[in-house]
Image (cartoon, rainbow, N blue to C red; front, side, top):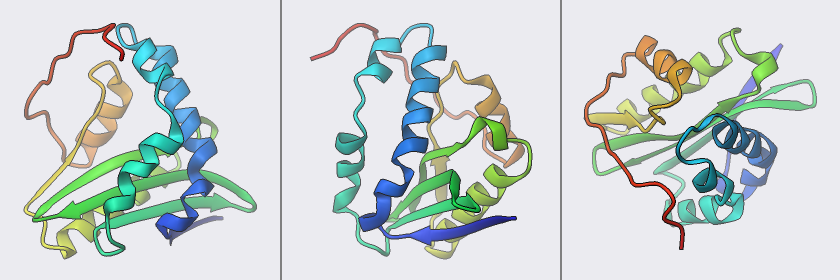
Length: 151
């Protein structure tokens, strides 16, 4: 049985291993931005969310027994909601965990009065693009970036 529940920002370390699996997935599958994904650090990425109040950030985890198998992190500020980061362990995909996580966050953003709800997905990640399409998300803009520029 899957337990799905919210955690506070202070407990975010719970998702570190799953977040790292997500980072490695992107590093290994990216054709153009492997180095960008390689250089991302959990502590730096998560620190950026410390500015959000408990009312504007939602972190949800999925656990089976003692094992954390998924998470979703979202923000809702000034009528704009964003699915910031989400990952379900590869071995647990296809059972609806990701859909439950994302749908719960979309509902939370709507309750917060968000009129715009978005998610940023790597254009190289077709399976994730298809996942979000099933949830009613569609491409709006395409942001392009030069590769190999790391400071």
